[in-house]
Amino acid sequence: MIIAIDGTLASGKGTIATRLAAHYGLPHMDTGRLYRATGVAAMRAGVALDDADAIAALAARLDPGLYEEAELRTAEAGVAASKVAVIPEVRTALLQLQRDFAHQPTGAVLDGRDIGTVVCPDADVKLWVDADLDARARRRHAELTASGATISLDDLIRQLRERDERDRSRKDAPMKMAADAVLIDTTHLTIDAAVEKARAAVDAVMARQE
Image (cartoon, rainbow, N blue to C red):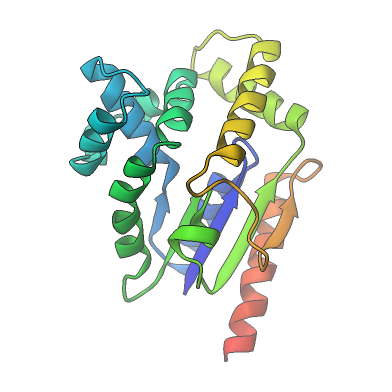
């Protein structure tokens, strides 16, 4: 069973993915973490975020285990991830890693931007998780503030809008909803309600497969 969960930043897709993985006993990969780690690796090394060759080389030898979660969850890491993700060579370097994870004997849950369209187009279940911009900005602002970061809500709204545009308009593997994905709009949902909708979608597929 491969479950592909795509969607926008701060829509709740990561939490949904984690909960589904635990419920169904499947391994989980947050693929955005790979791009965040690549972006952080570039910043650590002083590599410009538009230096395609140098960043692709970093991605090719990336060890995600070397990066602390707190470092990867900063606003700066998120911006860097979005910038390096537009580089086709970076996406190619990380693609097989994601596919190998997905095709374990047990299957897996993967969340990101292009799982259902590029990484695992034949996934058993595809979900698209989204929410309106203001709701996502408030959630992300609360998360960053709780971690001690200082950023205004207006700046965060601007950053999210820019990131959405960059992710949707990139030439290679743009962020978009797969034609056969189930939409989960979390704008007015609690996380528990959103997870229940996701579980219902997975259960429906499992019932058809039996």
